[in-house]
Image (cartoon, rainbow, N blue to C red; front, side, top):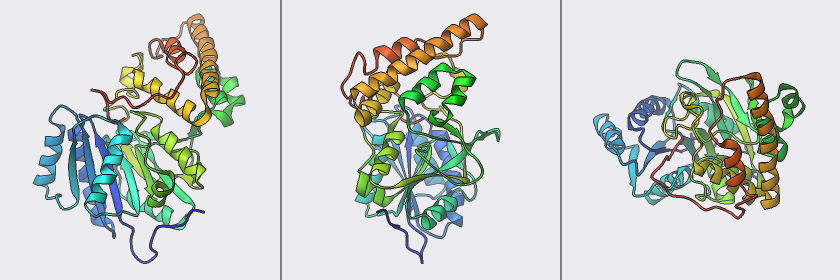
Length: 343
């Protein structure tokens, strides 16, 4: 049974892991916000920024900011020679801290395109302290213009994939309990998984469930990790009092609303296939592909008949089938790319 790692008399030590790919100025801005949060925090907070072989001046920009602002005693920048993806970068951050003799009670995964708001850190830490069965908790988000993005998630399933594809109000109402995305309220709530853009993990989760799976390059890795944590007895919670400003897709571009219509990269489909095959088997994964394809084909026909704008990723229907378990099968491994390393 999970138990608290947190000492009742002292504030827990926190490691912040940030994986950068060509977002140096955003990371520097995020560190400014973390510096303010650290000054208010009563415990030890250290940051490891892993540059995932950006190939630009990102690492130099971050290092320059660290030197100029005197953050060297609590921020370390690691230049990775390969772009191994999100899980890989976070695992490097944890190993780097361990090699330096730092054993944190909590590990806070933060995207490079996030800025924490005042109180975001203690909201998560205090929730973990009073909820010993919680192994993972995540923040609420808002866009840079202040619009709220208050979502958490259910684990993907065959019915959830159909609901995601069909995009028909009455079907979505019928399958509401299977939809992956959940609109959240103002109170903490137990959920299946939270976004890795701001995810706090208790040390004992890593001890029991292991490190994040580096077979994922990008996307689905936090879903897989939260499922692994549940399988060893930990809960996952959404904590809305921890607010983080997030502009999705600044590194990968996938969730950038201004880039709708472009084709999803192959690593997105590889990650999706890995998640379903690894956790549910190839037959279930193939059924998930077919369920999404059936729903999505219905939506595409309705969109055409209703003459609605086409905002879907290019070739999504064919790519889902041809790059999924039905035709490829097996368990894909990590693809280290000259590509994206964070959301």
